[in-house]
Length: 211
Image 1 (cartoon, rainbow, N blue to C red):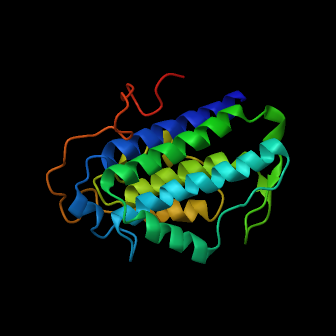
Image 2: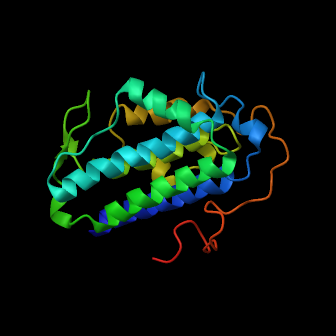
């Protein structure tokens, strides 16, 4: 991994850690409450983040092997997957977010340098280099963290993300979040104690553990 991509991968790790740290302590009732995305609960937002990592992992696996892998699911299939995921218990949902993110991270860190310019094909989009998936994942994690409406907003974005030169429509997506409230709406109930994302196994110092 060259320096620029490694730095971007590190930013994704840090954004994922922040998301998981916050999501793990949201109580069951608040997970089922509306998020800041119209018609979406907080649980649905988190399930979407997990499925997004799975889709990107499949794309990068295809890039690595030279074989086409299924890209993001159709809107109907994606919605069906979300419907199944949102009914999971909180610890199962957190495990899905963490496990899918770690699987994506593993494929990302193992992809040879000469494969990052291979075009990937996503339905409805013009093919783009695999390297752009890193930017897309960072945007996905940071923006959907805000969408939870759980006390993380644009003011909490690292300066490097807030000032990142994004192509459209990602630039507009980021701008749309600037009007989000700074505090949870409505206020969250007292948080439950943090729990390991993978019960039964010792939790490392952080989600990413040792490098």
